Length: 193
Image (cartoon, rainbow, N blue to C red; front, side):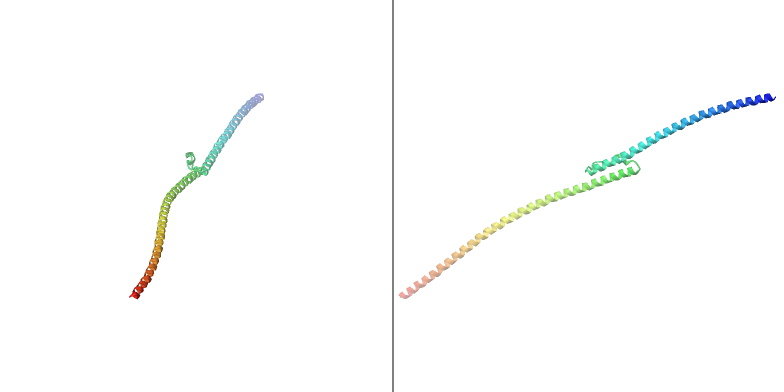
């Protein structure tokens, strides 16, 4: 019985050894499968991380470059430039920046429109002032011409007055001379009688 017990023990040991080897082989296979999946998931996570970082990088780059292009256009005087709708939609800081740029451009357009209207009013007022100045100048020229005519007339009148004065003086001299001659004639006639 001892032999049979010993044989039985040997057989149990062999069975146990076989099962341990089987379990070890299964563990090794499971380990290899886990390692495969772990490596695969790690590679996939890295690839996904690279994809996401690239997308985020492109988003930031496009948002910054889009706003920079717009700022350069506005700085060069192009107020017809508009913020792209795709930049206005996001609810993040870049969307806030794009909306602020849109408001700034619209406000600049309003200011420019006001300046243009003011310039038109100044131009119209300048034309009216020019017209009034021309009328005033024409009136001044007419008045100067009238003053020249009046001055010329006054010169003529003064000349006539001088001539009349001279004529009156001569007439007075003639009258005085005649009066002296009449006195002489009167004396001569009186003396003759």
